[in-house]
Amino acid sequence: MSASAVSFQNFSFKYKAQTEPTLFDINLTIQRGEKVLIAGPSGCGKSTLGHCINGLIPNAFTGDVTGTFTVLGRNAVCQDIFARSQVVGTVLQDTDGQFVGLTAAEDIAFAAENDCVPVSSMRPLVFEAASLTQIDGHLFKPPHNLSGGQKQRVSLAGLLVSDVEILLFDEPLANLDPAAGAQTIELIDKLHHETGKTTIIIEHRLEDVLHRSIDRIIVMNKGRIIAAAPPAELLCSGELCSYGIREPLYIAALRTAQVYFEKNSALESVETIRFDCTSLRTWYEEFSEETPMQTKNEILAAQNLCFKYNEQSDSVIDDVTFSIMEGESVAIAGKNGAGKSTLAKLICGFIKPSGGSINFQGEDMSPLSIRERSERVGYVMQNPNQMISFPMIFDEAAFALRNRGINESEINERVIETLSICGLYPFRNWPVSALSYGQKKRLTIASILVTRPRILLLDEPTAGQDFRHYTEIMEFLMKLNRENGITIIMITHDMHLMLEYSSRAIVLADGRLLRTAPPAEVLTDDELVNAASLKRTSLYELSQRAGIADASVFVRRFISRDRHQRFCRSTLNEKILSSDDFICCGAFNKTGALQETREGFRHE
Image (cartoon, rainbow, N blue to C red; front, top):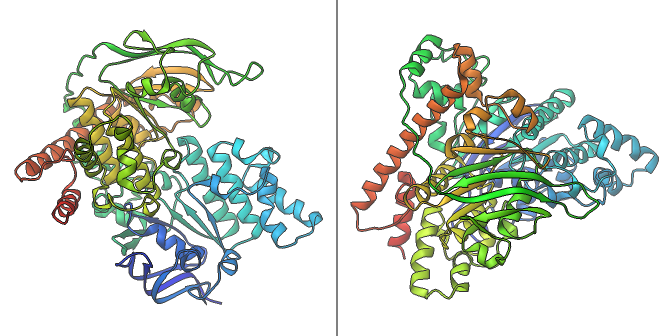
């Protein structure tokens, strides 16, 4: 029997509808029992590679194949999808799209039922898989009533029942709160060690995956594999950021402070990396912070806000009071089910409060219609598929403006401007169906940005985005915040985003407000982190190891310096752009993105 689980030899794949291959000359072997991470920027081909492994290519997605590809020593190119499903199990990014049963137990049992396993034998299999994935206490609940982390566990238990040899996880952290994400990585690691199954994770959140050890990181870019090495080797190189993969924050902090760290130490963990503590303390003590700008007038306020779905149910939002100032950038954080999305629906008028009020610039918003509220607060939903109405990208981005009766000339200008900023201009005449999940996310943001509301409320604005697109979108939002005074409210599970792009965090748990404070203070408060199912930043642990007394100040100083450096880079890009005849608000884009956009205009 072959020692390799998956092997590609000079393998290329081109979708039938495309003129160029998505995968080029792939040479990769994943050994049996190995645990690997496939990482790279959006559109690099990592999901396509995953589709080859689980059999969706060429069975569901047809195209031209060259080279050879084997799974467990068998020719995989000619294998049907049923045969592949017997050896490769996949947990999708969107777990809701995987459920077929009315209860978690039925869903877990699905594969066994298909194989005509007797009920007497099926029950022990289901309970064993549920116990191993720690979901046995929720077996008789509908899957759609479970939290994001619990849904992941149900999907994983279903794979274990079918006893596949290869586990494939496609963006498993995309929709999970920080604590649930950490638990998912711990569970994947536990299963890997206890079962010895080959484990393949497709994910761009490197630091979160490195919460537990992996054997290799496989880096993809533009359809090619450009590196496949142990984590410490790639982290030492310092080249990951250039491929759209964010370095762990503790390594970025050491590089920013120009602090020496041993290249041969265990770089994949903040607990094991060896570095010069004295130099880090010196940098911290010598660094001076800018005085934060004073906030302006209050723009949005919730007073004793409450919400119940009916009189018999518990409160989803319970006596929440907060205010947001004009021009602020605020993050709303908390675990899955804390009430964050419900709060957003209340602000936008999709549901009406059971008690309390929401004011916009001192005026009660309760008399306003949803459309009237949308002129004040633009809302971008978490799931892009729930927002998209048109088959073509340009029409989707233009819909809100056409609905307001704006003339086509201005619509064309504003849509092109916004699509360029969101990295979608080259695809403006494409169908929406051709976009990846992350690209659909950027399209929904663009469709709201064109209306230029006074408050922009975003539910997980960077979910599924690689580091480059994450930076481009957030820097654009901050540009709107700085130069146009648009207030930004972000519901997020991304602790990096909360640290970098918000001045204040509103922390919820079980529908109640726990605290309103600067993000650095939130993420260095262990009690608050545990209560809200957040994740303590690795910068906190780095400061503790260096003997820095005030961890929150250290975190704030590093984030301030890092953001300042990014702002300088974005300003430089803007100057480069303004020296050309080409005018576009996406001036802060990195050079590669600018070149791509320019070429798009030249080929208009």
